[in-house]
Image 1 (cartoon, helix red, strand yellow):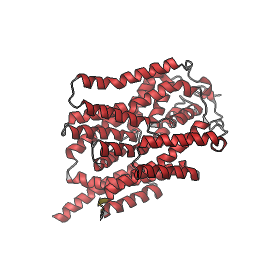
Image 2 (cartoon, rainbow, N blue to C red):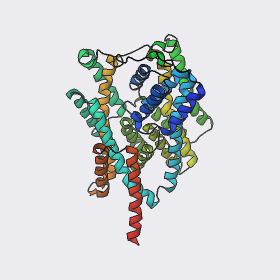
Image 3 (cartoon, rainbow, N blue to C red):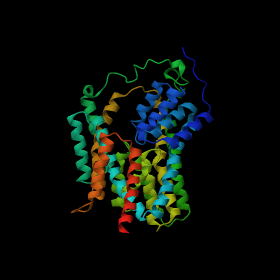
Length: 442
């Protein structure tokens, strides 16, 4: 029997969470893989069972599952302090990078070389969305009924302009009814972790050493919700007290991104159509082209892709306040704050429940229908952005963008080229095209 490693100090964990914030490329799959390799395989701070149990439930929550998993495992190791450290450091480097790229974008974005680079980057991003659609569809659409749910979700958002939260609520209701009346057909009798015969003594935290948590009490949950509400109101109270002339804008921004955080089932690609629909068409904070540019920037940074919402907040402040970089920065900071604040509540308030629940097949079966609806919504996102990039007008096709989108899709889907590598290739092709255009013009 192996000897467990010494309990990691807070400083040791801090060093890893800081490093993770800068290297967490590759989307949720890559980010979870990095954490698993370090926490489970290399350092043996957390056993496979404990890690998978945390991951299973983070995937059921709205919000970025990798960031929530970091918060959860940080909490397992060092309590509230560890959870806050892990969760904040997971997003802080990405937020700073998005801020710097946004500053460059609004300052130099109209330069010909930048325009040419983005003309290749945007079709590549559409191809990334299509490959994500196929990947999620293969995993979530396993029955004709789920295909019907996906098709219905697409029709509702694309043709009838039904909002994303209502579609998610409808999918949850359908999933509940199906699970309620056909429970056996949608439930699993096995625990996915039950066959993990591991030497638990080799790990610091394992299945038999679950963190000693006080019994769940409604009073504690209400107290935690009160604390979260206090932190939610604090920035708005400061803005209101400062006599800001555009307080209604900040209030709309805070409410909108808080709502988005509560309906982000299925990852960033699922909520982006909702963000685009409201921020572009309802509020007019930015254009479809700027939204596409923000998604392209978000794909090039570490951290969760949902960080693209920070770019939306930046552009909202920039455009409303006539190019003010200070107000744009405030918009980015508030958007990041309100997008991720609920994730910490989900983990800290839900931990006593999560730690005592090894499996919940009914809940998982309900959420399969949410994932099916998300597939239809992602298809809407691809068409929405595709039309903006491929068609400069209803009858005018941008053939270069169309060709590069097809090439990008083939490279990503069939040749399995790494996404970050292909983004670099797209930017490089844009630079080469700009140079050649200048050469032939001369």
